[in-house]
Length: 314
Image 1 (cartoon, rainbow, N blue to C red):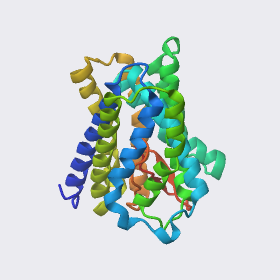
Image 2: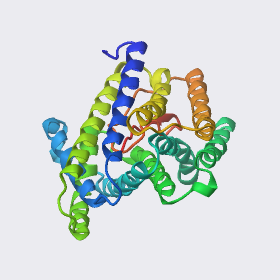
Image 3: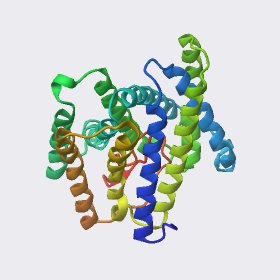
Image 4: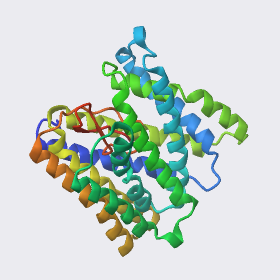
């Protein structure tokens, strides 16, 4: 799988999204009442250690350039990470992943609010259909803290996807990701100390597994988008939902109902149509960031209003 052809790049994204869902499984195996701040701290430390071999990509001369924005994004990411843990533990794996996929729709709304961008008719339809799809999946009578946590994760993804366009363009993706985790590690340590839970081997294994598999996802994404235009392959990112259904059924005996199928289609189909429409208009540059939150398919836009994938997985 070199990623030099469209077919091999699509295969890389399919495999990469399976790896990312396995990362979710490491979190879902945790029990309710898990020390979530301990998990967040261990996840930060492990991610920094996994990135250490790539230290040559760090610009030490301008290491903290854009520091304020990195600080904001890091702490938004921390909120999203904590929400993700609660959502994955309490909700079926496929349901949580379906709600996370609302992030691209939230990006559209934030881009209108903060950057004055205009929504096309199809984009407006995707916004309305996407939020209606969430209501279909969750159903108002079943919305609780877990569902709100999943929506909180999606919101954190969307905010960071919008903010990424304001980061220094000459910073390496490794440096952006390294700073993201470095800046929240002190707070995570303080919160873990305040939490007062005994250090848990299960939490350590979960943090290590989720961090490692997300790094594997990142490798697949970078290889996939290195030689191929994003519009030709980005639809393959939505196979994450298929993998979530399969893995949820195999490991947790979770069988999606008709409400889930209909609601997921209401979220994903309009986004796929937008991707097809953009492909006909003009190809996007294959510029992608290393993932530091959950969904790579959340579209950010460049200064000309051209939609680009921000590349985020939690």
